[in-house]
Image (cartoon, rainbow, N blue to C red):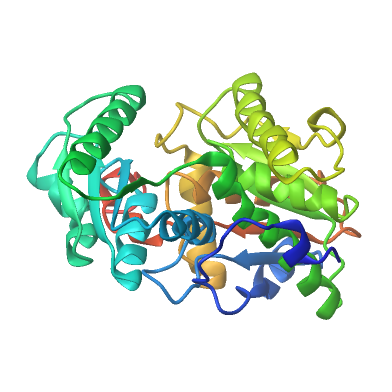
Amino acid sequence: MPELSSLLREPRHVLLETATPLQRLRRFEAKLGRPGIYAKRDDLMLIALGGNKLRSLEYWLGAALEKGADILLVGGGASSNLCRLTAAAASLVGLDCVVLHNAPDTPENRQASFLNRLFGAELRFLGSVDESQRNAALAEAAVDLARQGRTPYIVGDSVLGAMGYVRAALELHEQSQQQEAPIRHVFLAGSMGPTEAGFIFGNALLGHPFQIHLVSVEYERDELAGHVGRIYEGLRERTGLDVAAWEQAPPHYHMDHLGGGWGVPTPASEAAILSFARTEGILIEHVYTAKTCAGFLEQLANGGIPSSEPACVLHTGGTAALFSQFGLFRTLS
């Protein structure tokens, strides 16, 4: 395994003291009649119900603290996992936090954003603005805070955040060796890209032991590949490592579960939520993990992944969001 300290020289504030579990899904193995089914449980972390953004926050916090920041700025929807975990991480290191939601200030959105206030963050609702407008509002807020004598840091640099999942790929590879679980296939949600690009980059550093599968939950294939590829190339440039170019490390794309787009459930994604809950006692949510797990189960069931090749789904968390998603279910009453 590559030596992490020599690979990732960016400042890192450790939030994860130990590896997250690699769980064998024995009930699914029995149900599907095949061995070698696993979940990498990044939903099981000690901070704020966990989730993939904590791995990125180790690097964002490292950069913020090195800069001498005294306040974090972060943007997202009312139920954003990034906002929740940033608010929690800020409280852990004694920084203030301002959350800018691109959502109207309604009772429902305040309820969805409740955990941010619980962790002590200041909330600002921007209304129904798009991502570029939200980013402009973050930049403006940073300027205003600087004028007040504060030292703000805007959370979200995608290349820096991807460093966390370079580490995750190496972590999973080590676990698969320790547990004698020769995982060949890894399924991830296909979205904005830092998690995906970081994991694919880490896989390339290891010599491609995994075949990576991206189940799109947000974009059509070309746009998804563009997001992930740009961050991957950004990692190559930032680290200076001799790693294969993006065109030489392509993942497998699965587009059949995108449905109506980001946050719009499909019958298969709802079935996956129920199946994971009732088969393994694992909670997944509608926006990211349900569609990913639906694609994972489909490939296992239809022979897309040979039974001789162990496979793993990366559970990126988001569990807290599930409690505001009851209205998205169609088969529960």
